[in-house]
Length: 223
Image (cartoon, rainbow, N blue to C red; front, side):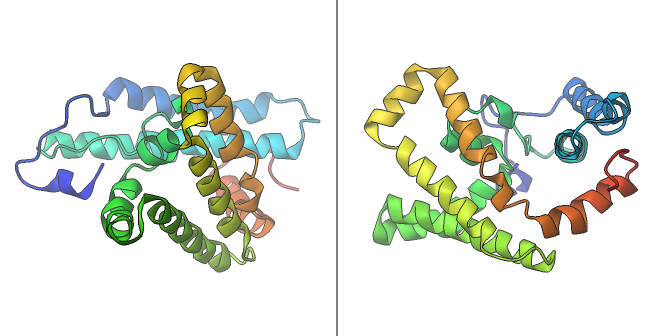
């Protein structure tokens, strides 16, 4: 889903990810099960952090993927060549694939036009790539600050993502990840998920996410 897709006369590019009604139903049901059914079936002693992650994944399926796919399907029905905003992020085989083509697909297009291309013309692609992740870190720092969750963590998180992308762009790493798809998936999961605590800091989790999920009826998160 990119801004140009709303221009008159635009057509869906061959092979572009487009939403389907069946996919929307599947994602919505998956999200609902993870949010409201699974927590009720978990043993009483299930660690709180596991409950939280199940709820977060469920909310992503329901409120990000299914809801926005449904909106895209409506736009397509009235004549706009709108594509999926989230293209199965768990299928990513590299960080470039994850951040550039699967996760929140409207952002890479905007950052490419506004930051990457202008900086790349003057300072080269590597500096431009760093500028994109610095901007992402700064933007999420504002979110963290407004949620009274401190500062520094989101910025460091996106610096680690830039470092990971820079590593996988080397010739040796690129060949290794291309030849071993399973390794690419493990690598992507590790770099994206393991340092996520830098982004999901306690203030954001306890001050916003948990109250929102609890208000939505997710059981077992009260402490």
